[in-house]
Length: 81
Image (cartoon, rainbow, N blue to C red):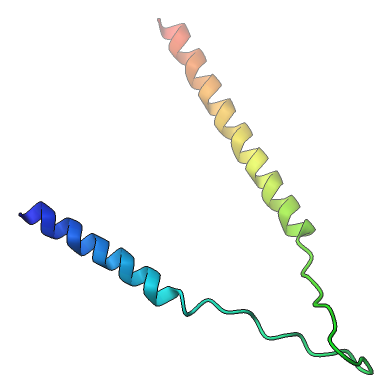
């Protein structure tokens, strides 16, 4: 019975979180028009190339570090045997 109540409580919290956060999602307001511009202007996107490159470099470095540590650990285990 306790397991059933725990499952019901968890499902209720998940459903509540979904229904509460759904109305919160909204579009951002349109950007202000440039000086002298008339009519609707296309929004200008934010550049992501600099931040994306940094994240890729950090991910590659982290992956390389993990590979180095795993190989070093494997070599130590082989020499001990």
